[in-house]
Amino acid sequence: MTVHAMTAIGQRPNNEDALVVGGEVFLNEANLSRQDVEFVAVLDGVGGSPRGEVASSVGAYSLAKAFRSDMDEEALRSALMQAHLDVAGQQQGPAEKGPFSTLVGIARLNDGYYFFNLGDSISLLYSHGHLRQVSMDDSTTPNVYEYGLDVHGFITYCLGQPGLLRGDFHIQKADLVPGDVVLITSDGITSTIPFLDLEDILRQSMDGKEQFDHIVEEVGRRVSLDNYTLALCEL
Image 1 (spheres, rainbow, N blue to C red):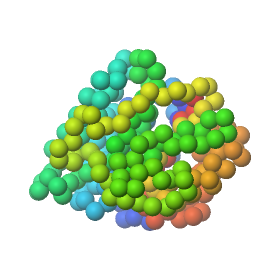
Image 2: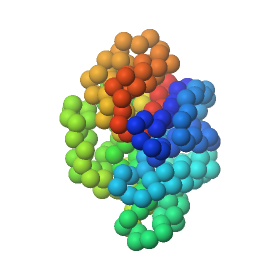
Image 3: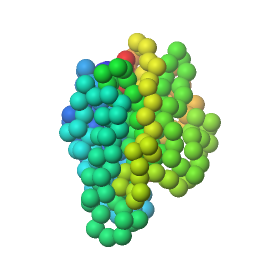
């Protein structure tokens, strides 16, 4: 994949998002492009829990260290579970108070591409002129973004959560073709740009870098109140 990615603080005092591109982890402010990437993840510290930036960064470094291109699906699931355990190990008080983080991403494994997620950060697939949500929201108001609704519920699963099981991670093989574009986002993007507006931006732009630049410009123009992180992946 060719990946154009960024993370930004927005209107918050610090960045509780973390971005993983290949084996690199990016915190605070970053804007980059990389070729031949096999792993991308976005983690978002859960609002309302303390030290969200600790949860997202610890999970990001755990995943960056664990990923190998010869992994199979079960090895990926084990890496995701280890990231959860590493985040849970940062707890300094009652486990139900966190810190917690969401997780969303795409990985090229030994038999193809796989989407994965936990929480309500979103992955989107733009293919043949149409955009659709791929990730499965762990929320009391799941998968409402693509229907044009601006509704945010309570997160039901996240990294660091007590009692989380291996089977709670959403992992699905990706049916992708050359020319497809995958967006991996924190909710600072999707809460700022409505679904249909995002689809229009993708349709009007000529290539992946132009699409990425237009999305970043638009979220800046609309002034996201949250941290925001985006990885645009070209197949």
